[in-house]
Length: 280
Image 1 (cartoon, rainbow, N blue to C red):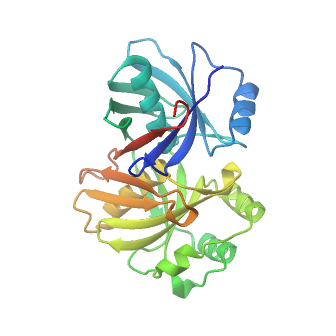
Image 2: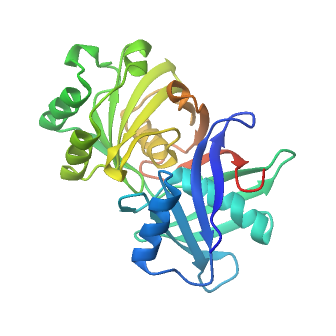
Image 3: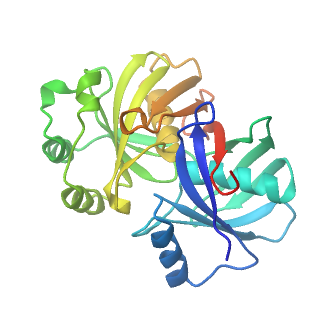
């Protein structure tokens, strides 16, 4: 079984978040998909099979330790793989709990892709959860940016977002993987998203992904979509478009663009370039 390796949200042909991609006529067994994902070792591997009508695909995502309901960077990587497999275009994707789409096209240097996320929602974070998260990262409440209060955010998967006043504090992110895994799984969180405001529509981000057995994710499209929805709910001056720089502190700079309407809860368009690691 061929596993393609494609980095999503790359920046000028560098960086990005690698995903494994398996396109086949039918899914392997769940145990086999888990084994493949663990062997590939990336934060996610996406498995896709034809789903009836032309351009329709059934998709499942696995991290090295668990199945996840939605993964943005693996969807962008899958878009590039589908464009190589069947040509430029728009593909409908049936996930475990949502129906989404991805568009992809060839560029001079590879492929670019854009996904339409599941619907979004956000709620203020439980103060007890915030205290636990601050303790995990050894931060203090005074280091949080009051302009972006802690929230539980969703766009196909659940995340906790914490905004930090200092870029240096973001760069210093550190935590124990086992403790992070226990916290995230206890509260049903896929990642904890740490954010610093660079400008009103530009953000520096780090995503702890201990729930999937990975210390840090270099680009997280699902969290980016959820964060865009949160900014919309908050009434932030977003101008219907934001740019996220992620992975910089781990040497894998990634760039994520998110575009969205003012309609509460509506889908977020998340886009980026890809870098082929299978056929260099």
